[in-house]
Length: 452
Image (cartoon, rainbow, N blue to C red):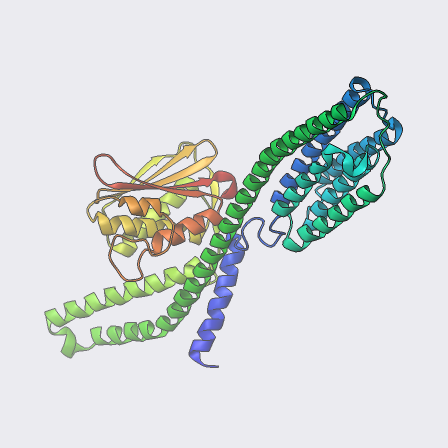
């Protein structure tokens, strides 16, 4: 096996362990049926529509039977109404038990509504009933909720139902003495009422269904974005970890060679050469520390793992390590956390803060401040600098890759990684500019996710 292949294999092991410790994986809800939440909301809308249908039918039957004196088969029509009520109870119970709401469930629900409407129309004049236009409501909802194939199936079944009503129905027993003009007037009034009901229900419920669908599409877009970001992180981690393994050997060789040079009298006799050798050793040491830091982020160096510490101890250790590795003593620490609390020190969180501190140092070489404070059950770690601050477009695209003010090709990945790692830890990242100059990046983490 080649060195590169071996490095890739080790890098994949590192990434797997990192993903396990950070809780990486598909975003919440990813891998489940995409339309589950939207389907539940849409089924609830159908339940509400069915209650309106039951109330409307009861009122219509009362007006026709009592007000117009038209005899209706109250017994069979009551059975249909009871069936609709039972169907609603079954639907609500299904949702309460967490049952999945697929397209098939919505299709069956709409089909049963069509069957119930067909039965009521059969008992009240068939196709001559002016309320046959209510079939359009079911078809409109089907067009919004279902696939083209399912919608066409419901159109075919509804058309067949209307055709059957033309061929067979229970005729209405009209009051004696009403002339044709009066009956036609009643028919026109019924058509008007049916149209108003159709238009109102379609406007209200289709709008609500469309809102559910837009919300569902937004959730899906967010899930796809998170999946793409996580894939991007894995690819970068694979490259970085592989490069770290590859660089380890030549850096060790350079360190050995420089150590031998320091013991060679012909080289150390010159103060300038000796000083340059010492500077080279320091530079190699910094490179080795950076490589070790990359491997530490995945827990792959010397078998190190997260360890118990306290908030104050974590901040103090982090500040000391950063000052030593960056040879910079401009970092000021402001401790406003209050009573100390035991937490787990994870190298991933440490690397996140290193990244933010490095960005602040690039913009403000003479002043960087790290503040720790407690806000209820939340730990807030703020990094402040006195640089030029963030451009408005950077604040608008915070956490997106390749958003950088440093002008480097391929730059802008630091905050992208910070935002995604902190999100995996259950926290959030906020960035803002100070009114009197400089910028502040605040990482908020729930203490419950850090404590034992």
